[in-house]
Amino acid sequence: MAGRLLEPRSIFKATAFNHLSYGVADYAKSRDFYMDLLGATCTYDDGQQCALAFGTPPREIYVRAREKHPFVDHFAISIADFDLKKVETELKKYGYEPKYDGEFAWTITDPDGIVVQVCAEYGVFPGAARAGHTKEGKVPTGSAASRPGVFKTTAVNHLSYSVADYPRSRDWYMDMFGARLAFDDGLKCSVAWGEIEDAIYVVPSRSPDRNGLIDHWAFSVADFDLKDSEEKLKKFGLHAEEDGDAAWTVLDPDGYRLQICGEVGVYPGAARDFFHQLPKKK
Image (tube, rainbow, N blue to C red):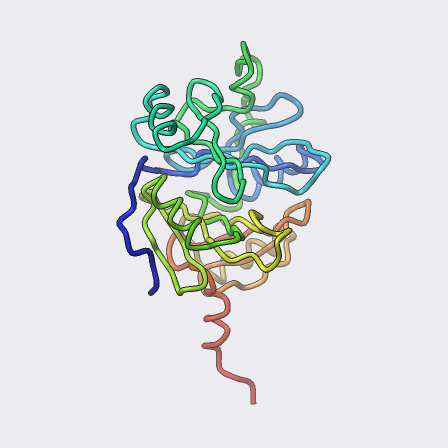
């Protein structure tokens, strides 16, 4: 396995994806889709955007009505022992000019220009940076907040992220968030953190205009079984494509690729390896 030569700085200790900010055509339709499929809880809804939570510590999807869609405009990573002033000082020490995003987050950009937030595990919500903005009157209750899902989602298994220079991006996430190198074949890699691993798959971009693109995301679900999960996805009305022996790929209402995965056993290129192992037809 190829990898970096130096030990990571580990400026912060990542514990989970805090949230993924996702632009869609119809936020209510997408909200209900992800709640019903993932069993996510709606923790915030202001009529234009919502936050859907799952896992411990919580991971959230901020689903927002956007003219440009489907589009992931930023993601945020929770760190242990967050302190607003100390995090700002540490980021400036390493040459960043962090942007204040409420009492529980700072915003920077990674080497490929993607907006990344460094967050506390709790306290972040959509619009938190706006002066005087609160969650008052925007926290759903009853069936609007929680309903049975097809799956019990436990983590963001991974984001797949195309970059100009994959070793540079790999090292940046290891240095910034103390991520461990989970997979590296010299062409692509996975950097991961947390007890139930959240990961970023860093893959080389094939064209300059696709640099810094998050092309799909994947969610870990409890008690994953390949055949059973396929049947559940079909019953939900989705066409499922096999992606190795621990994941299925489907499309959401905006045509965005997402995967339903086991908590372990997924890695970049797993589908290709899986199909190479199948007996050839005579």
